[in-house]
Length: 190
Ligand code: ADP
Image (cartoon, rainbow, N blue to C red):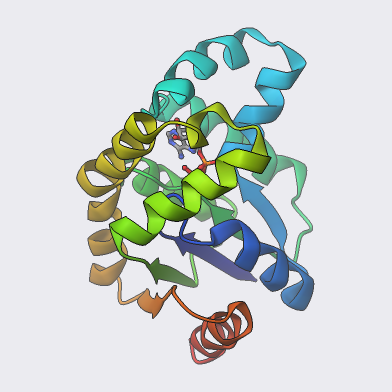
């Protein structure tokens, strides 16, 4: 099984690259951002609670996203592998993911981090906000909060995988196709 964590700040290009990776390796895409947005759309209690936090740009509680990932792993027991996008975002989530995968006799194969400077991220997110309709992409303050949350809570997740010798970083500025080739190289040399 190929279990890939795609890592990087908001606006790094995880969504774009995920689509290409999924197509090439037939993986199941698990994006906690997408899962949360579908809860909001469905108007569930969980969605209502998450929306307030997401609109501010802060993380939703670990238990919520871990529970969603657990359910998806159960649902796709026969998948050839998974791509985790936007998860794990805290060390607690990374530890929980290891435990969940272990209970299925599986593990993370590799974490690929996309590196993009903060200034470029802000630019990309504001442009995306003009078309995505995502409230968290439309306001500079919210974008700053998300980048701050990333730098404080999520960056330590890279060290978690570095300690397991599973961490690879790739420049996320440049041609989409070139970045994709670099990701494939990292996946296949692992
Ligand atoms: P982006 O990476 O572009 O910021 P996502 O779609 O991954 O966007 O996430 C949007 C929001 O959803 C986050 O700002 C956060 O509030 C919430 N969220 C998504 N995934 C997680 C997670 N693993 N843990 C906590 N909160 C999350």
